[in-house]
Amino acid sequence: MAKGLKSLGDILLGIVSFGLSYWFYRGHLEQYVHYIAHYGFYFQVLLNIVIIVLLSYVIYAFLKLLLTRKLKKQTLLLLYLIYFIALFYLLFLKNIGLQGLSLNPLSFARELYWGSHFVPIMNLLMFIPLGLLFPSRLSNLLLCLIALFSIESIQYFGHMGIFDLGDIVLNMLGILIGNAIHQLPQFQTLIKKILT
Image 1 (cartoon, rainbow, N blue to C red):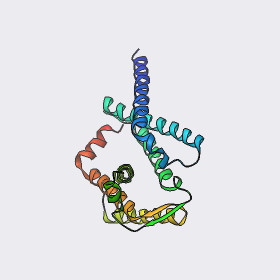
Image 2: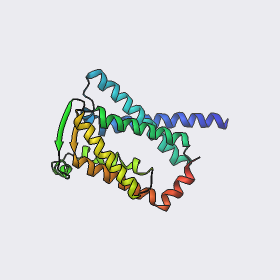
Image 3: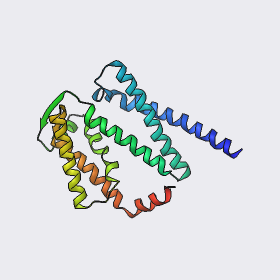
Image 4: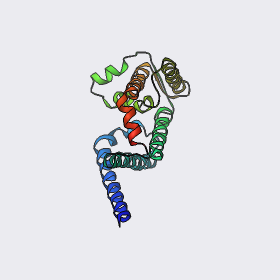
């Protein structure tokens, strides 16, 4: 009986997660898909479905964590796998054929000033989970900086985007925020408590 109720609860949580994902996607993300989908109508439809499904899983895992105060290590690994796949797509596949150069380290300020908040905010937020993975030692931060310069260089020389110093600044800031959270004793305690 208890197992049946647990399964029913999981199904209901899945439905709620899908509903929240669909609502969030339609209300906040759909208008920005044109930034990351340049391969035709069918690709865009498939990308919409993939984003909604992956977002549903992320919301499901988060709601499950809130309800149970526990998170399976496999779930965390799967969440990071989704994160790295999304990061790879956003860094190397969304702008194939595009090449540009911006050596202004504050290029994002212009975007923010003119009301284009999505791309600069995402450039910051999408690197916070990476910063959560390791402590902020000088050697780690130096490796991150070299990696960010390498990524931007690959984008430029491979015609996969714009080499933008402003992106490097925001990405590095995201990593530093993640590192700062990682260093907090409360974060370490929380991780030990929730991981099963």
